[in-house]
Image (cartoon, rainbow over the protein chains, first blue to last red):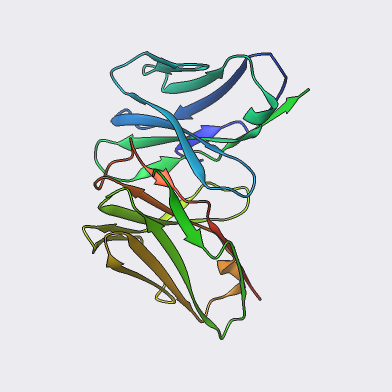
Length: 111
Length: 114
């Protein structure tokens, strides 16, 4: 299987919270990232968390990191239709200088 | 200006053509990246330039030839491509390599090889 795994699809109603999950396998990961990609567009770095942190909040976004379970999540509060996109998590490992991406989660927000 | 621009937006080429993709940034970043992204897949790193020197070549076939003429420009020269090379090609930049905490992506060039 892939080193970084995400569920393929998430559907929520406008105004609800969305939680996108990611699991990774390398305990030496230093930074973990969340990117957003809208249709036909490049990637936009949303936020990142350093591996010695449990939580990071940035406006409507909350990142939770459980190092013991190697689980990362992105919570989007008050989800809007403009949040519809594919969300990729990525890890940067201590041993290397490259990112390993998950397969992406497509978020669909229904009005 | 926190923008990475890429041209063209779309490109259709035959397997015998020679074409180039262009990427430009004016943020003073010294690292520039080329990624390839197939449909419904995450991006895959192809090349990294740091201070105008090729730092990373992820075993990319020689039909893809990167060039960094100056610190603001990054080109990807294409020759004798195959249909399976059809993908979205993304350029990115960051202050230094490796610095993914402040990496900016361009909108991509969608390439179709016939």
